[in-house]
Image (tube, rainbow, N blue to C red; front, side, top):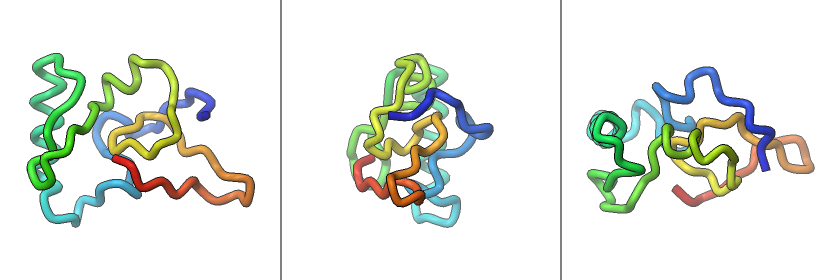
Length: 91
């Protein structure tokens, strides 16, 4: 699990290994994220896939990282035993 240290850009940007600004659907996903946060929702349906994505605020308020690679995980990545970032495939 992560040490609960927040990324410096935790609110404004998703994890770069989960959603890049150059990815198709990035603007729509970030707009959906902002609407969910503004509305007090814990998450939103991804506009492209329809999958449920938890907001950065919900994940921060939960207080811990599950190490599953959540798109909006606010915590600093946890290195694996080889010293590289964990390569998770879950959103």
